[in-house]
Image (cartoon, protein in one colour):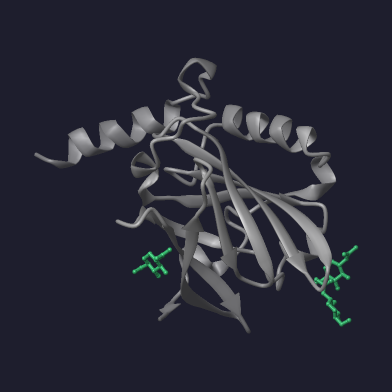
Length: 183
Ligand SMILES: *[C@@H]1O[C@H](CO)[C@@H](O)[C@H](O)[C@H]1NC(C)=O
Ligand SMILES: *[C@@H]1O[C@H](CO)[C@@H](O)[C@H](O)[C@H]1NC(C)=O
Ligand SMILES: *[C@@H]1O[C@H](CO)[C@@H](O)[C@H](O)[C@H]1NC(C)=O
């Protein structure tokens, strides 16, 4: 029987709670970020850009560290009611955990914190038409992250001047995670 141990793993992950002691906030080992991630929650000072039809509403699928140190994000993006797969390569910078990419403008992407296991929080500064927009994203190893991770995300958002009205959930809100996929 293979089913029972797998079920046990899923249950223990679902029961996992945010643990301050295992949080990494600097000197990241980016290779350990590689893997499958779900977008659980996003926040922005311009919510229009992360709400339905927003150009920065991203449904993460996986992140991979490339040999040259760049970070590849594979995600889904809703275009006219269809989920389209997008691969975006963020170029590394001289700073650990900091990347740049041209996507809907110019972006600086920062890994803020992670436990390499259950969650990773990213911060992005987007400049489009000369307007700067701040975006935070909580990615989870499973989509059903424990509430304690969401509470942590709310706290981080507050540090960036974003409160509950700037935060949206991406779980069970869109077809991208269970609808048909067009490549
Ligand atoms: C927010 O984003 C929308 C959509 O891109 C844009 O039309 C609007 O001007 C932006 N608002 C601000 C305050 O930048
Ligand atoms: C790193 O490799 C990726 C994939 O081959 C490529 O798209 C990217 O431009 C490379 N970055 C640099 C700085 O060479
Ligand atoms: C960028 O500028 C165009 C034209 O002025 C405007 O329609 C659009 O909403 C702007 N986008 C953002 C993100 O501010």
